[in-house]
Length: 267
Image 1 (tube, rainbow, N blue to C red):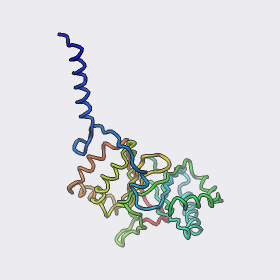
Image 2: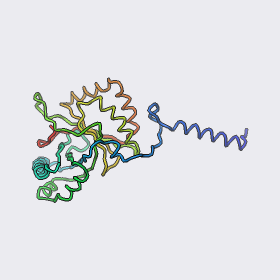
Image 3: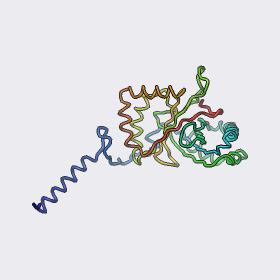
Image 4: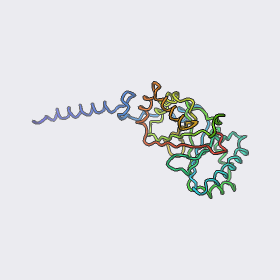
């Protein structure tokens, strides 16, 4: 049986219309595709409520030189603080990767007052003997410039409790998002972070470096507390929905367990 030319066009139009209706994703149908909304303002204006700028440094170190690296970086960071803390430079923290895809890796986070302060620091900083010494131990280095999500706030120094024999463990969960989804991610996690307020340390999104890259950092006394807090979060209303709605926004994710270096303001 043959369709007339008119009926064929009508049928194709109907199929196209129905497909269009099913391709729109809402919070009630999170796994279907969603058209990217037109941005109305820069992420730096819509997702953060502070001018602070964060630099995340990643150093991969020769396995045989990790002790020497730690000693030299401690001296290096102390000299930076002594020289630049009066301008507002803050050493947020330094950690060694304890469990992750690269174990001979260190993560350092520095905070600047704003972008003019970053410009000033870069303009004044000069390579010194300690810089050169660190390079003797480093195999690969990279950094990112990030801004903080307003719902995480500014990270504060942490000390271990009186009943702790060891420092806290820190988990850095990193997410690479689909382009155009950062605003939605921020809106969802604004609610999600309320389910684990005591564990939150840092939440930032990249501005320079790998883009659409988000880092959430959490702190726990030990692995048992981590398990307990994460289990308790799943029992709270809204947490499972938060996970369900954010998973489709992610292209890639990874988790690292970090232990603080001796000179880190976060212990």
